[in-house]
Amino acid sequence: MTADEGVLEQAVADLRAAEAAVIEARRKVTAAIRAERRAGMPVQEIAERTGKTAIDIRNVLNAVGLT
Figure 1 (cartoon, rainbow, N blue to C red):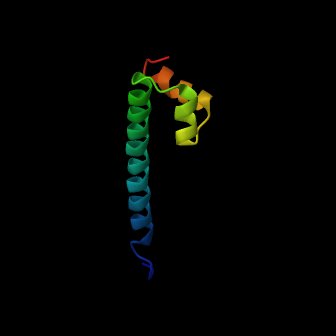
Figure 2: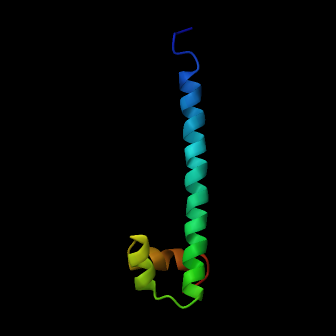
């Protein structure tokens, strides 16, 4: 046993929590993009507001069945 006992395990737990948070954030962004597009916001405006490219936004919309 080392003086850092549990540090590795805690780091892994922290990483898993961060990964889960990223997944949830992506879901929220996807839902917001979908909602804004359905409300009529142009793809280019969504891209500008999110800091993404229009291609990124179109890819998200295609993945959720909107074009």
